[in-house]
Image 1: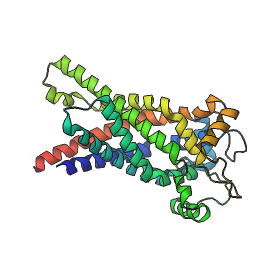
Image 2: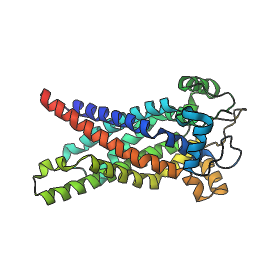
Image 3: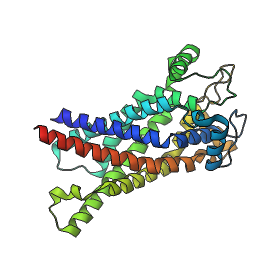
Image 4: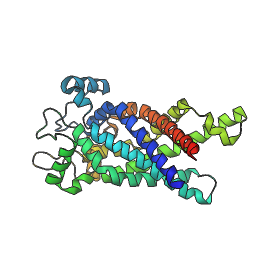
Length: 308
């Protein structure tokens, strides 16, 4: 029974991840291009703002430009969400063995544990996605697609290159996921408690009082809290994952180098480049993710009850 429950969470998470990426990918491309454009020796065009970036990419690169890196984004997101919800539910179940409900600290620990494991599994996919999103028609020796990018990176840079950005990625996955899921769980408890008290119904059926609108608001609110606190890690990771120049020299050596150069030439604002596109992408994306996740999970639970 425990294994079935964990796989239900994984299936619901994967479905949520697929729906999210399909809906928001153009904003992800824009965010990535803003993140790496430090205003110095960039081969990317300069965009004034998010609408200008969207219009410019659509006009100069077409649909393909707006959906650059879509395949690894779908692959990475589907795997990430599936593994995340699986590891998260498994960690929660382990912590629940000796207590009736989890404290905020244990929710945080469960989410952090899941985030770290997912990061190790998916970093190569996110690296390829970032590089494909940064390609323009003027790119020298462009990758033709996901598999070509993977082969070229292994051939020219070695397998270690697939784990560029792993350190900020770990910080991002652990802290972002932990903050988001802790906020989601605690806000969810508050809404359930409020609805239960208002309706004077049995607490055991309180969860039935939540609908898709509630999941959307809870998902967006928890995501915004996580984004505000962890966004600089995304900028650092994206800058580390850029393709080396034609001589094979990377733009940044490590995370500390990114932090020093960004602070020196751009100040605090540099660590928040692309955040508008990020918020526009992630607020509705989180809503879609949790609507799909909760509804798919409820559907699978009902199907399991019927079978038993």
